[in-house]
Length: 94
Image (tube, rainbow, N blue to C red):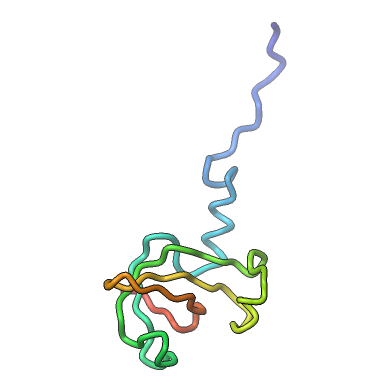
């Protein structure tokens, strides 16, 4: 078999779309975050948590997401095992 040229290779992060993903959201899986002090009480303001889910605007399917403003929504887990879906405006880095 004769090779006619080298295939156009891309770094794995670009080929897999990771680069685009990181540009659209503030946090990613496993990041340590805190719920902002001005968040609604049911989100447990001031509590540290870990990100375990990221829903980009194009991934927000279903009526559950109607309660959130446009933007990225994160699933977070608190230290006691509780969890919540939180709009990015109510989270900050630790």
